[in-house]
Image (tube, rainbow, N blue to C red):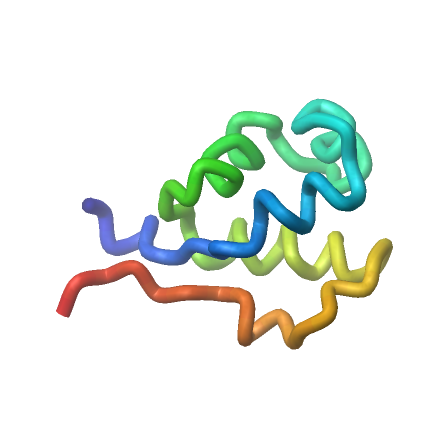
Amino acid sequence: MSKKKDRACPQWADMMARHYANDAEAGQALKADPKVLAKLRSRTPVPKSALLKMLHRLAERHDLGAAIGDLVVDTRSR
């Protein structure tokens, strides 16, 4: 696994289901590629910068119920 793709957000699918009907709608609202959103939904690790960007944009529109730093999980094996 690439060291750049080492972050995930386990709560992503639940947050998206609460606010958006599908990845295409979420992609338009969050200005994101639906492929990246699909990876996040399936808990596939993505670059930290992409994950943080999506969480910041989501936090601007909706209450996340937790701090952004608490939602990001390091998936690297040590």
